[in-house]
Image (cartoon, rainbow, N blue to C red; front, top):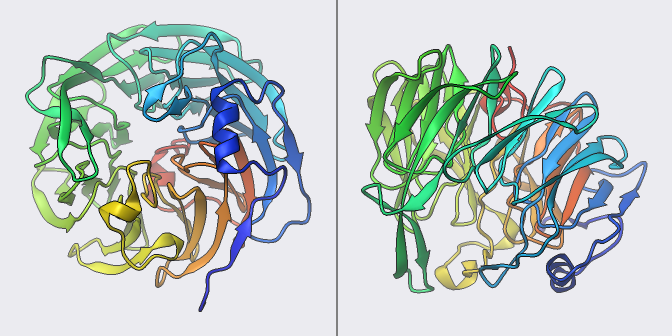
Length: 437
C-alpha cells in the first residue's frame, strides 16, 4: 500500500482531550454501547464506554468479554475518588453489559477463566475470584504488595506475581525519566509468585524474587516461566522450587513466551534494551538482540518467527533460530522515532502485546490506534483509531479483535481473517488468552 488505509472508529466519537476529561472528572456516568452491523475490516462492530481508562487486556470465554478498568491518570497523577474501578462482563457479540464488579483499586491485571470462575488481580494487592455467570465474589486473597501480573490456572492451582515498592531489592525498577533520558527518581522493587488453590484461595506455596514481578507467569510442561526486576526464572509449578534463573542486564516487565524449547523475553529500559532467547532446559542464553527502547509487551512465536512490539514505535519479526531481524515496521506512518516525537506522554510507543492469525498481526499503539499488519513484510493493512492510548493487548476470537483504550472504551472490531489467535501467546494462554489444556 502506498498510503495506509486508516479507518476511524465506529459508534459515538470522543476526541482525545474530551474523552480524557470525561474519564477523569465524572464522565461516563451511564456507560453506553453502540453497535454497527455488516462492517468492513478495521471497523468497530461495537464500542462499550466505561468510567475509567483501560490498561488490561480482554479475555473472551463462551461469548463473554471479561475486562477490568483502571484508575484515571492525568499528567502523571492518579485522580482518586470514591468511585470503584469496575470489572466488566460484556456480551462479545453486542458489547452489552452482563454484570460488573466494583474494585477498590484499578485493574491492570488481565483476567483468566477456568471452568465457571474468573480470576484477576488489582493494584491494592487483591486476587479476586468471581462466578463467571453472576459476577459474585467467591473468594479473595491479599498479597503484601500490588498486582499487575495476570493469573494462569491449571490443575486447580492459580499462579500470579506481585510487586512491592520500598527499600529492598538490589536494582532500581521504578524510575521517572525526563525528555533527555535522565532519571529523576528511583524506587526499589521486589515481589513474589504465588501458587494458590483455585477453589479456595489458600496459598500452596510462594516464591520470593529479588525484583518486582509485573510479568505474568507462563506454564509449560509443569514449569512456570516469568521475569522479574533482576532475573528470568523457571520454577516447578507443583512445589515452587526454582529450576534455574537467568540474569538479564536490565529490568523486565515483559511476559515471556515459550516455544520450541526456548523462552523469549524483552527488557524494560528507556534505552538499550535486549530481547533474549533462553534454553528452557538449562537456562542458558541461546541468542540476544539489541533494541533501542523497552520491550514491554509479550512476544509471540508463529510459524518459526518471533513477533514483538517495542517502545521505538516498531513491530519486529525475528528469526527464532538466529535472532536476526526479518523485518521491522514502524506503525503510524513515521519512518523513525526520536525522543521528541515519541513524547513522554506515550506518543507512538508500543506497549501492547501482539496477536497473530493466518497472515495478520494485530497490535495497539500509544498513538491511540490498533493496527493490522501483514506478517510477511510488516506492511500496514489498516488502522483503527480510538480516543486514547492503546495499552491493552488485542485478543482475536472468530474474526473479531477485542481490546480496550485509555479513552475508556472496550472495542470489538471486525477483521479480514475468519480465525482466532494463533501462535505461542494464544497456545500458552498469555495476556488475554485462556490456557489450553
